[in-house]
Image (tube, rainbow, N blue to C red; front, side, top):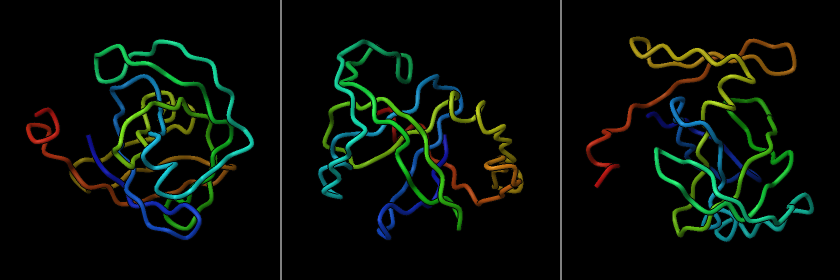
Length: 131
C-alpha cells in the first residue's frame, strides 16, 4: 500500500492507495473533518470486502472531487463508518484510470480526461497498518 498527497476544498489530505483491494472508499471521519455534506450521497447499506474483510458500506457518494497533483478528478466511492479521516483508492479506481505504479521510482501514472498524469507515491509500512 502507498499514500499520495491530495487536496479537497484546498485542504491537504492523504489518500491511501490499495491496488490489491477491490473497492474505493471514503471514510465518514474525513467527511466530518472537512464538513463535507454532499448532494450526491445515496444511502443504501450493503456489505463490501475491504482489505480481505467484510465491512458495512453506508452507501455511495457519486462523483466526489479531489485533487491529485494539480489535477481535479472525481470518482464514485463507497462510504464506510470510521473515525479515520481518509480515502482509500482500490483496484476499481486503478483499473478505471489505467494506473501504473512504479515502486522503484516511487510514482504512479494514470490517465484522466485523456491526459497522462504522474504523481509521487509514498510506501506505507504494512506491518504498522495491520496492527
